[in-house]
Image (cartoon, rainbow, N blue to C red; front, side, top):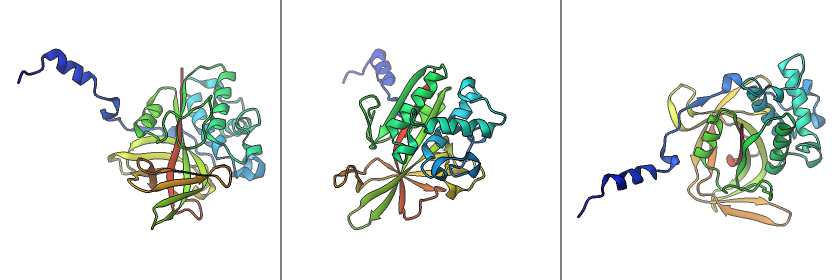
Length: 276
């Protein structure tokens, strides 16, 4: 059998998908804030109960403000004062509309991010979402199952930020149906290594705005475990039910602190921002 020439071999090498290339670990944990959404000093409406989205985004914006995008940080006397002012702005009706909607869907989070960045005079290289949560014509899903490589590449970008939408689920062990009853936003601050420093491609690091993680900054090392069977189920407009195959989604374990009543946390969606 005739062997392929060098030209053919080069084409084959060039065709290797980017997903086959190992990602180097990233750690932004020390330089990214971790503000609690119910911090009384914030003065957030309803004591900040629905403010995980604006707070998670503000963590990243404060990080980016010190790395080439200073106008993202409001002018205040302290970093905490600046971040608090930014959170109120992001949560407002003109941005994410968090208060009126009792939370923040991926499209509204992206609407707020886009408006903030543009009003502050910066350009967006990409603002994308993957996952099975809500989507709009302006912000469609790039994929229904979040890609871990896509998420990692988003955080590695110089002007990049990533926010993860966590679904809280009850599990029927007999039918393997995961019933979603609530959701939550967290800030991705690193990946690729465990707390002890050992490299692990399925470990991510997050800053969680929820009060169950405490008021003081706390980086959590979360282990992603792929699901290989079962169904994810959520209510859309009651009594409508949306169901899809769970295969390929990730359970969030390790140091992930579950919401009361949840059997498991699942990575439902992610939003990636990259600034020019």
